Image (cartoon, rainbow, N blue to C red; front, side, top):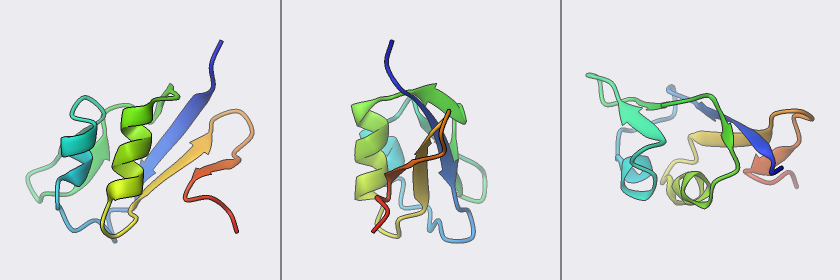
Length: 77
């Protein structure tokens, strides 16, 4: 069985570029204020979700391992 991720969007940082929708259309939605929300806060590890986080121009998307809380993205320094 694969890893489970917890996905969060910091809406105080999100600028509504919709890059997350471009990379993972099933994983994110924009509200009427163009703020991103994950469609599910907990999800199976998924390359499209990771690509969305990596390509967010303001790094508003954080991914952690659901069970341990260890950072997946952005990686801890």
